[in-house]
Image (cartoon, rainbow, N blue to C red):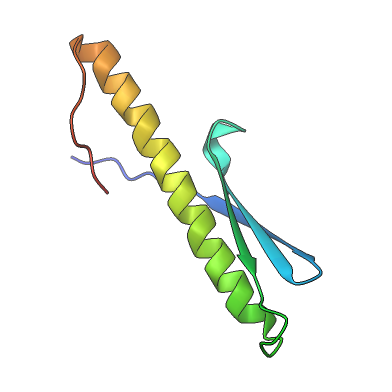
Length: 89
């Protein structure tokens, strides 16, 4: 019998001039896992905020995933007592 779990990620977007900053927080883990992504619009480009939001969010999620992988690698190493090689997404 399997037990289903649900983890939630909260994405916060902030616009500062031509830059969008996204913060992705794995809500079940407090402040342990937070990813940050940025997107900057070239001043010559058309202002389409959604594109910057999507790019910044993708980068924040990627950063969050990498931090989670690093943590899992550490936990495995602590459990097995030797370095973990090549954990990939």
